[in-house]
Image (cartoon, rainbow over all chains, first blue to last red; front, side):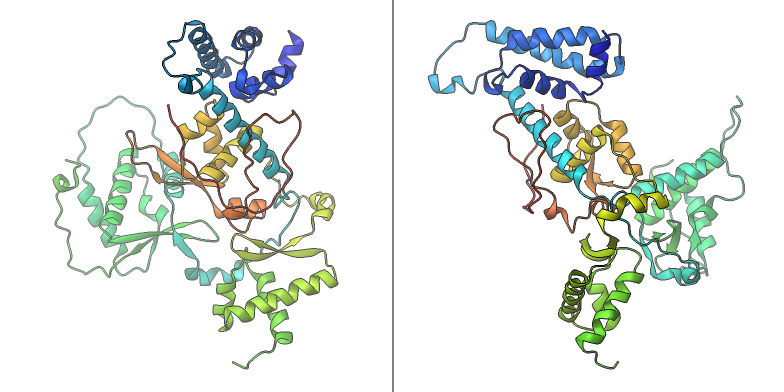
Length: 256
Length: 198
């Protein structure tokens, strides 16, 4: 059992394992002896049962595929057209997948061998702070992933103890939209985190975030990220008029 | 501004590349100096020739569409001892998934998983966190799965000037013997194929 364990650690998945078995036995990839490969595969799978169950799920799926192909090949074929025979080989898809997988496995090793920044090559690490004040130049559109990360940070801070008390709360996205707009009034920009100050509850955080997304959708604000420091800022897209009150009902936003 | 000849321009371009935060594009330097891009390119060539003739501890690498000064690979062992950065050590699943994303982008998670034959959710998450891949959008098929592509950080990490300079994807019509790995790195256009899904 021990030697199996050592051996199995090296396989990334069922395709990897199959590739290994085919190569080890010097089988012809276009004419895989299904009975033999299935037997060997299942033997290894047996040994795996004592190992990582999480992995085994995918290995089991492949075992089923192998058995399916094997049984298909046992059935008598109805040969109508000789030319189609090759196409009908039940192994065809498996072979294609194996070759395809091999392609990416190989190229990933080539990629790995390339000189990597921070491992083989080093670039100057910029020392900065003086330029900080001049940060306006370095803004890029913020990506979805960064925005979600930022929300996660805010949510972490607003975690509340679990208490079972059911209150009916009136949270309105429209109200928050107007609140954000008035916060932005006369400002060049505000920090993303400043929208969430004052110990907001989780639900309030969510409504504020939704309001922010609505504003982006309405093209009222732009959310940008500082290139260097990664902080997220909200800019008004147009100058916001003093008196402007958005005529939006929650109905029209779909949050009623 | 006073017109500069190539002997004055070359060290100036060197200064820009040195001081830049990351790889700096020719267009950006041309804009900063109010010069034609061709002049910048000439200065870059002169710099490269100079580095060739009088080797330094660094060299100029064309990466992610720009230029950056990087230490020579043969000094890697010494520089690692400085311990300024902890390099990202790739696991094989991460490397395989990253390769699949790099060559087949835009690609969905299920396409990656079909190719690898294993669940790739956590690997994709790690690659997202390391900013080597990003979400490009959603695919217009039922379920609207996310589609992924590589980032500029990916190009910077592997010293690639663009996606076309990825190592050639070898087509196999047979198996390669075990333990052999592809060695060639010629530049070739990206291989784009449709992913067959079950």
